[in-house]
Every structure is written in C-alpha cells, then in structure tokens.
Length: 291
Image: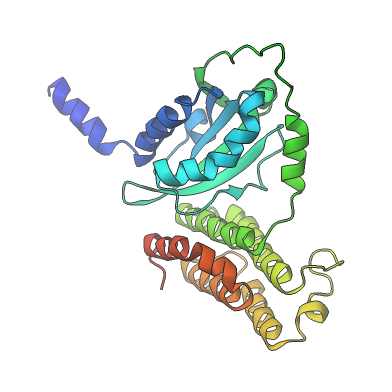
C-alpha cells in the first residue's frame, strides 16, 4: 500500500478534535499576548477518544491578561463557532487562573473545548499541578520602564467571586448537560451521577437568582419559603422537584427531559436571559437533537 493511501486513511479516520486542536493552536498563538500553550487532559495523557474534549492551558503576558480574558468569548464565537459564552468552570482546580468551557460547532457537531487561562507568571504552577505538554512557548515582550504592573491576582480573585446572573446559570446548565451526555455515551455512571448534581444545583441557582436575588440563605435552605409564594415560583419548584426526583444516574431520556425542564424554568422565571441566549439555545437543541 502506498504512503499516499496510508496518509489518506489516517486523515480520514483521525478524530475530529485533532483538526480543532490545530485550529485553536493557530488562533491563540497568533496573539502576541500568548506566551505558552499547553495541551492537557486526555490528549496529553494519551487516553483520548472521539468524545474527548480539547483541553488547553493558555498562558498570557500578565500585562495583557485582563484584556485577553475580556475578549475571549467574542474570539471563540467569531473564529471558532462557539454557540454559547464560556461557562466559568467550577470543577477545575485553582491554579492561579480562570477556567472556561466552550461548546463549539466543529465538523458538523458540538465539540467541547476547555481553556484554562493563566497569567504567564503562574504557568510553572500549572505545570506542577497538572499533566500537560507544551506545544508553544515564547518569551513575553520586555516591560518598559514606565509601564505599570498589572494586579492579575486581584482580577482573578474578583472574577472568581463575581455574582452569577440568570444567564450564567442557564449557560452552566446547558454545558453541564452536554458533559452528562458524554458520560452516558461512555458508560461513566459515577461521573454522570456527580455532574447530575451540578446540573440540578445550576437549576436551583437559576431559580434563586431570578426569584430571590437578595436571599440570605445558603444553598437549598428556605427555598420553598422564599420562592414558593407566587404562581411562577410554585411552577419552578415543581420542575425542580421533578429534576431532583429523576434517576440518580441519568439516562439519555431523563437528561432530555431535564434539559427541557431547565429551559422551561428559564423561560418562566428569567425570560430576558432566554431572549439573550435564544439563538444559542436553538443551536444547542439542534446539535443535541432535542425536542
């Protein structure tokens, strides 16, 4: 068999995320603010399959970090077909930066892309705490004598502590729903179980953000007392009760029903968030073949 035929077979059968990896690498390294690009996760450990996400650490010159984070959603949407703003990842460990999960339209279906954006001054910490492989390194530009220092630690802390909006919780539920779908396809029952709690918690937080934004109670405490006194609140709590009564280990059928309930909660309690995300929600439904 000729090498040309072999090359054609490799190209035809390689996972779609390899093409996305190449595209993201070219896009991010085109920015002079990016000093390091590391691949981590299953692609770095050699355990990737066709459902694996593309997982990057992006180190950014400390002086450009705040600006880079501020344009990241627009960059992913415009140049990579991101259908949702990034979900600020609450699962990834604290390594001095900010984690985001994106769902992008790649090769005709949704592909998960995780970006952990870190100031260049913290990249060694990331390399100590996670398995990763560098695919791009460059020295940051020298700082001019008059150039002020940027307090990236304060920015990261403020961003992490920032209150989340109804829109944020809708995005979280949709992204976590996609993660659960992958766990079901892989037969990863334990991880699907843990992520189902995250999904239900996002639904609860959405209800509280919409209907009890000044709540002084933690988590699930006093939820019925705060929310259940209005027709909208009662209907939302009925949907939430159905969500937490679903199978502990979700199935495709129960996940489809759960996603429909979360969207219904959002349409009822936070219609402005749904209006903002309507094209994204429609695209999400299309790619996941939801009713």
